[in-house]
Each structure stands twice: as C-alpha cells, then as structure tokens.
Length: 386
Length: 187
Image (tube, rainbow over all chains, first blue to last red; front, side, top):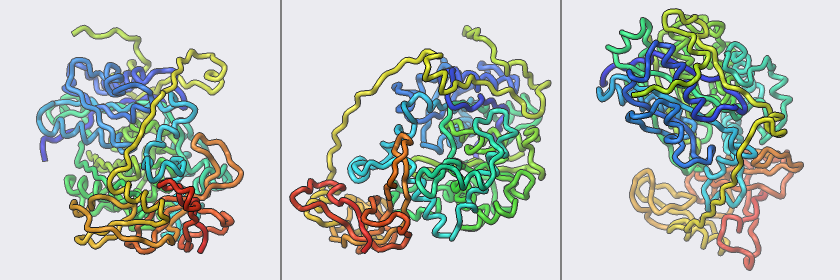
C-alpha cells in the first residue's frame, strides 16, 4: 500500500509540569533533536505534520500556525491534525500518507503540548467536551467519564482496584529509567490504593499528570531512509476509527474504536495473530485501567483478560509481551499530543535496540503504538517493524 | 533561505555516527516549580477569555426539553435498526436516515455505572461526594443511557444494576432543561 515509509530519527524534550519554554521553543527543541539524531537538516524535509491539542489550552488562535516556526514549517507544506488524545499516534499516520503517496520524500512529524498555561488547572479546558444542553447543566468534570468507564470495566469483569493498580506500579517504575520522565516513582500497589480518592474508583496514582513537552519524528521514503540510517524502523500499518459521540449509549467496558483502528492497521501490516506477531506494545495509558482496556481493544488478549496478563508479569519489561516499557503516560507524563508520539518514539528505540536501561528482554521486530481520546471515541494505531 | 542561528540545545552534540546507543538523547526543558510561578520568580503574562455562547436547542433536543418540562422522558425510534434511542436525535447515526417516530419512555432505569466524585473541576475537595451515573432508561433499547446524578441514597450503597427513579422538580419550577430532573433515587 503506497511507498514504504520509515521513521529515521526522533527527538523529545523532557516532560515537565510547567516549562519555562514556550510551545514554539519546545517544538524547536524536539524538532532539532530529531534532525540531529539522523544527521538531517530542514532542507531535506519535504513537509510538516503537526499534532497539538485544542487552542483553548494556549489561548491562542490557530495554535498550529502559532507553533509552526518552532516545528520547521517556514516555507513548507504544513498540516495540523487534532483528534483529541489520539493525536500523537494519528500524526504519524498523517505523515505516513504524505510520504506513502509519493507526494513527499520526507515528513517531519511534531507534537507539542503545553497544558500548564491554562489556569488554574487544565482539566477545565476539557469541560466543553460534554454536551452543552443535555450534560453541561449538571456541572460535570472530566474525571467523571473516566471514573464511569473504569467502574463499568471493573464491574463487567469482576476486577478489584489492586488488579488495575498493578499497571500504575509497572509504568511508574518503568519510567525511572526514562531520562525525560516527569513522575517516575518507585510506587507500590499499596501506594496506589492509599492515594487520595478523586472520583472513585479513580485515585490520584491511577491518573497521569498534566504536562508540558514536545516530541518529533522524521519519516522518509525507502531511498532516503536507506541513505540516512542503517536501521530504519518501518511503518507497517496505521489505522484510525471513531465511535459515536452518544457516549452514554456505548458499552463503556470495551473500546470499539480501538479495535477498529487496530484491525485497519493489522490488515495493512499483514498481522493476523496479534498476540504472537506483536512483540512490544505501547498502548495509551492516561489512566491505569485504560492500558488494560486498550490491550483488549488491540486484541493482544481476550476481553477482561488484560489484568491477569499484568498480574502474571507478561507485560513487564522482561515479560513475553512488554507493555509501556517507556513508563507510559503514567510515568513519563501526559502532554496530550506529545504523549502519543512519545510512544512511537519508544518503539523506535526499542526496535533498534537503543532503549538503554529500558530495553526489553525479549527480541522484538514488531511493535504497536496506540492512542485514544476525545469523548472516549477516537482510536489511533500504528504498527512499526524492523 | 537564511537559517536562523538559534542557540544550540545540548542535543546538538549528537551526530548520527557517534550517538550513544542508550538513550540516544539528552532531554531538555526547564521545569518550573509552583514556587517559581506563585512568587513571581518568572515573568508571566495573564489574560482571561471573555467567551459567551447561546446554544440553540435544536430540533430533536428541543422536543426532548419540552418533554422534560412536562415531566416526561422522550426517545426516538429507528425502524431500520429497531433501536429506541435516548437522548433523542433527528437522525439515526447507524442507518443515516431520519428517525421514524417519538416514544415516551419511563422515568425509571438501571444504573449502568457510577462514580463517587470528591473533587470539583479544578481539583478542590468536597466532603460529600457527588454521584454521577450512566442510567439506562426503561423503555429504551438495552444499553441506552443518559448521564445524570444519583441522590437520596447513601453513596456507599450505590451499585451497578441498581433500579432508580427520577425525582422531578415541581411542575411550576421546570424550565425545559435536563436539570428539571433533580436527581435519581433508588426505586
């Protein structure tokens, strides 16, 4: 399907609660780092795919255009995508078709988020997610949808909080080895269970933080990729799908849009048995239970089985199917769009064997990154391979 | 094309040949502490948005709101997929065709899921938890729920599968809004 497209370079800033740098500066740091990582310059970049969250966060009109100078867009074809939390992984799909189509030889993909600007707390920037007439008069807060989903998931499969807390423990500990991590910590299951209750069943340590940060990756067609690196990481498949915005009509224990996006990406990649053909996964984990739901949506295990997989150590960094070896959003941080692209960057390092202390034990030649967002309705998936 | 000569970040010390394998970068970004921010150690410019909106009720939701004012929960029916839907809509998003009629539903239902929420939108704590829930409405197709609040119940005794009934505002105080239902109590 189209020309082969590889990731040849990546860069990322440290994820922090509040950065001195502006969004433009964060974008510049990540973009420059990505170029340097593969010895390329902006002259060699054909177009730019930018992913970043709502203008509301920053209080600027057309935030993509505002950031553009830092993302190397000057004088270049540029397009911004935004599909909620799904953006970081979608932006790679967007860059992929720019290059796969043959229109461009290379594409710089940049994702940036600066959530700290919104006062007093970025959570309020999400309140407009709820329907203005049928929901907002009830004065909802964003945590509700996650708490409602988490409770449904726990109830449907008879799971306990500790079954889910294992994910937070794994990811926050994995992040201890990530030099860009914001909230890595050697937490235990007890720490998670004893943390402040926000919206039961959601407790403080079940949740990823608000963050500032940027990530960039460089995509190239095969001839460019072979010239700039010995170790291209190929985009074997990508997919994205949307579920209805009538979220109270959905089965909240399962993410159908993730399954549909995965089916699309697997078909393109020739993956017919994901559990055995995918060797490492970076599913979206803004909350601990989401990693479990997404493993099921990605068909890496049966419905309701992901908690057992985690308890058995299968998803640990030295397990048979390492999941979020980066530390995920729970450990590295959650600058929305950048967090999704961080997952793609992690697969790049893992598949090239360059993840250092985070390197997974098993041999891996194929991985999947996935993000999810908006009113729990967007699924985005990218399959990478070497 | 003139290239900007910005100050090099630390990452520039890397080259593709000499890049250390693991991890191949020095992530930068200057993190500020709450203290830096609160005590004005860094210069911050502030602005408050003044954005006001007036949303039209819409065709289908308009009729739903009229129903609420009369103390009724209205849904719509699609003859093709045989779903009875709430909240009502002018068209079926599955079949992508106009809906085929209106149905009066019960003001009772089943708790599909709920939360005990101890924080406000800006993460300030409250003593008594709010109990938001998705309530599947009796008379609609299975799984058709709306978001609302539970009340008149000890939060610790709420469970998924609990039967509940709407507690309406007195008729004279209803205004055609989702808040015409005060909350849902155990049946």
